[in-house]
Image 1 (cartoon, rainbow, N blue to C red):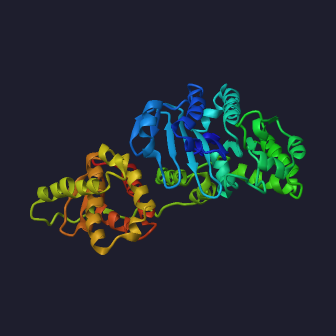
Image 2: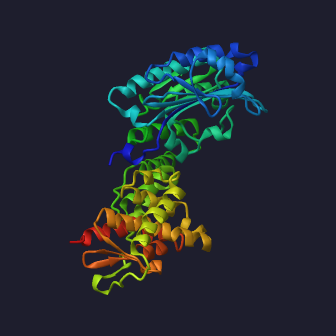
Length: 444
């Protein structure tokens, strides 16, 4: 597994803040910022915008006309986006309060775009030019460019305020310190920081890089560069201690083999991917690698299967397939859109949703008695339609079976087991039940 496949949720993020409030002078004050944004490389340039929930095609004229829709409690929030890969989201925000100002945040998704051959160097140069131009139009107080996931694993200085992030918690691939930070650190000390690039900007700010590009931010060379720079700026810190912390973060970003039980592997993978690296994916994978669901027990030998005891066998089957199973689709099609496809590939998505959302824990008795028939019928229908089984309806749903080869499978009993507690949608998944039935054999 590649690092980008392991960390699917990562973005590249560039953030720059300024004490200026361009919109205080009206739309004309925003024009220089829009000039810079519109000069972005065609691969990064936004073409759409969200001022409300509705997406609009970007144009300066439309933005001017609808700017009032971007007003928030204490400033403006404008979101410009790119509708084609790579996905780009650019936020321009203004705020008031004790430290009024504005900020530009540019995200590129996925981070793997940065690592594509030839992109890293070109992107680095373009971002440098972007910030240089921005600093020539607005005073800057702080800036960074880095992997968003790694930023979240560490100490995000944006949460400490956007004026002066002191003491410096860590350093990144791309760093911009405004005049107040430069003064607090000491200009001479800052300019002597071990760095790939050190450049003074207009207005007294300083821009510097720890590596030529952001592509290898978590490599040993990059971590050593980050640690040396931070310890230079904060001599009270230990190089070994800082490096140990950064290496631990790199470990979280390193792929770990997903050796999951094949019957529930896709369910566990969805859960691990949902939490992502910042949600403890590595520990989850370690735990999931040890997990094996209980063996499927909801079956009896075909010779022991009770005969149907309902008044109308076909009417009962029609109820299962046209009423109960359709109820399940109606209940969950918004949360599990794969159900609308009507294929067996929907089962792990349904299992994951029931498990992840805690349906086995939160159901009332009445809700459970409604959901068990729907889930059981939906599961049983695949045993019939995909594997060629035959319904054996019973008045008591848990006794209703699907005859398949030399076994009679009990989908309604499986559904009841799957909804009995918090972990039961995983322990008694529909996926494992179907896969076990398909392995053991089909009807002659």
